[in-house]
Amino acid sequence: MTGLVLGPMLRHVDETTASIWVQTGQAATVTVEAGDRRASAATFGAHGHHYALVELTGLEPGSRTAYRVLLDDDPVWPAPVDDFPDPVIATPSRQQQLRLAFGSCRVSVPHDAEHTDDYGVDALRAYALHLAKNAGERWPDLLLLLGDQVYADETSDEIREFISHRRSLEEPPGAELQDYVEYAELYRLAWSDPANRWLLSTVPTAMIFDDHDIRDDWNTSWTWRQQMAAKPWWHDRIVGGLGSYWVYQHLGNLSVAERAEDPLWQKVVAHQGPDELDLTAALDAFAERTDEQPDTYRWSFARDFGGTARLVVVDSRAARVLTPEQRSMIDATEMAWLHEQMLGGFDHLLVGTSLPFLLAPGLHHAEAFSEGLCNGAWGRGVARVGEWLRQVVDMEHWAAFQPGFQEVADMTLAVASGELGDAPSTVTFLSGDVHHSYVATAAPDAEVSNRVVTSRILQAVCSPIRNPLPSAMQRVTTWGTRRWLARVPRRLARWAKVPPSPLTWGIERGPWYDNNLAVLETGDRGGLTMRWYAGDVTGRASDDPVIRTVAEFEVPVRP
Image (cartoon, rainbow, N blue to C red; front, side, top):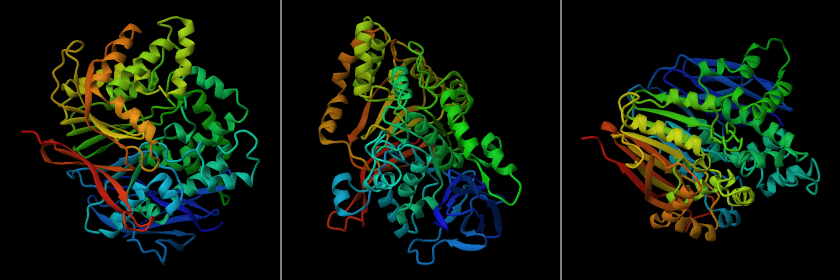
């Protein structure tokens, strides 16, 4: 394979810099030209694949500039027969309001009638086609992908065919991914559709993993981790998964300055000589270390959008503390970093976490009860049953890691009450994972906290982009959101010695189960609007959707 394999993907963009990521079919020098700005980077190799990330600097704030990509001085993007608008780099201005699209959970299957019947319309692709056909519409300043960009454990026919040419599907791990090379092919399938490829080339993206990027229920508990470690294929899976995540997703999350401090990236930029750097050994060693010692590397990141908004994206998978009775969604190092980021002084504080911080109350208290059982509140025998139930029913959200939940809830109230700077208009958690969407609103629980908050505390979930929840599970989930049903699991959680939550909350809108992509837009005087869009092919070809509005939620402006 030669030429441009994947990309260009527009990644971190601020007022004066832009990062453009590509995968190429061979070692090359990659050049990006945007107006009078030009920058180049040599590719680096990993497991026989070739990548480059080009850092373009000196851009004008608030500018919008078309760009092109060259490999060894030969133009390769935009493609000459492409029907999509030219990709652009749009830098924000300091006073600009934020428009952010977000969602999670997208399987990579074709867009023909058969797969559309099975999986529904790809909401990301429908939104891409809408933007391409409506040049006058304001495009998002950022697309935030909140996990499960790829499914390493639920594979399509295309990736299974690829795997079958490498090894037998009858041997473990069967049709699941085994190593970096298989991850590379899965990313190629996920990001190569022309409409989505165009969108990713012209809208900046930020990403964080969730469990299916590695395996369902990744890091649910200490018992789960020990069970996985005993499998002969697990080492190559986790090393390939984390290594490919650094290359394909994480590297572009960082600003130019942050990337310069990354030890692995320093090896890339320090390389001298005519031959391409082969990063394979260093990448594998890095991935192995970050899995075994998660406090040695931070996958979480944050960025500010002028004085309008701060976005803090939290790793709620790799940084977990799994030691029984000391469980936390994030470790002490990560928690200290989060404390530094959770500040007032912005109109909106946005916290991205793949797993919803606030589940429907009934589901939340059920998971908290489950953790109490697993910790031995009702004896060792019941604890073993609790661990089995935890894995079978996926009880591994924030509620099932109570120390971390309690600390972040306290942080949230501190921000919302103005203790950490001027209280923002909203503190909004943005999440995915659960294959249904909703909005929850929260407040201090008067029995636990005497804080007076002035911020609106929200949980907004957009899931899935394309991977619908089976109808039977939809019915169960809908019942789980009923307010009156929360009373029983809440009481059980108290009996299992779970501390009371400093927050109380309820579902304000939802749940709904469409494949959808959400768009959040800030406004003057602290206003905030969110809309969920789905693709619709009624009376149309399966690969030619239009978008429809599924739901809308608005936070009014401050008086």
